[in-house]
Image 1 (tube, helix red, strand yellow):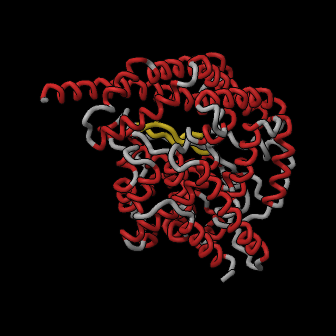
Image 2: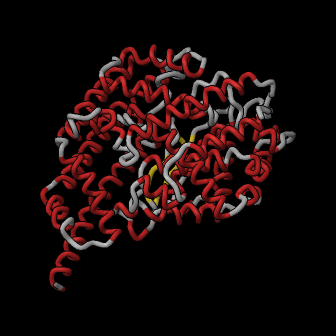
Image 3: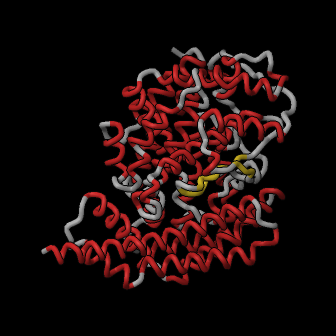
Length: 503
């Protein structure tokens, strides 16, 4: 018996070594992707696309090889502890999906996405969707093929969605988006009918270099670990990395200093989740983030519940006034109102308020589903996009750049990603409420610049678990109940009701 147990232990250690090797290949891909977004010369794409394609193939072959299959079969018959069972469960899920997809298709998708990125940037800069459309069409066809290999009998979009949220299910996403649309549209209408005019303290130009200094100030205030991170500029803000190296990016608009700050805080939320993962489990599912619903909950919690709160601006406004004397007359209340204004003409998702933001997501969700199902041709995306914006937001883009080219995700082939933004916002409110129940008044801590307790609570209840729990189980462990939109809807109803005098 002892010999058998030792054999299983040896098998598990060998299995973990292979899992870590796959993770490290993926980590190298992430660094190359970061470099392509931030630092790579403009003409570097031909080589970069082949590098990423090669790494995708190596990772795929390691994951789907006979060695991995043998380990999984043996370990599933072994006596494992709870953490080991979770690791085997997560690797088995990835193995079963990946094993159904040919390696050459994985390589092709990776190379095509790398080639698509500079075309998206050019199309956006030139305000010309036709530059990007042929490559987008390729990606749509490739992702349809990918989904069909994984499960030809299911809705291909549901299959793709599970790459980003494997456990809540597309039905939960649809129900949540429908609930948000039904509840938020009347609230937005009431806001727009309100006679309240919120403050507009930001006039003139705000130098980009000084904004970067302010972005670094806000990361210092929140407690970003500069020894394990860095801040750079990218066309579309993002965060990437692992618990030893979690990098953030932002972008600057000299007419809108709040935009850079909120995007920086958003990406900080992603990074602080990544940095909260346990060091000792690096390279295994126990040291990896749960999924994009949970990841987005962290970014939206810090961006909205902290960064858009009045107590935060009571704390941080002096730092802004030191960098930008033109806002010396502004009050914390002024900036709080500006950060939460529901604009009637906002076309850009990443600049949207907490209410209309979700209509931006609904537009993308509906278009993605129709693209993947074949009900919508790529060439018709700009017109359909504009029609849906008019339907859901009452505004119509004048250009492709402020319309269907504004987001980077489709250039990565990331179909099924967008719903997790709304799911994450919903979960953020649920987690923040649970943290406040445990810790007491978080506004007071924010006002005092004391964020360690909130960091610690999120690490204890979310970050440290990695992928030990499925999404729904993690939500129950952290909050004591299942995933629900109730807390988010209560939060925005109370907040915007007070802001716009609706109560």
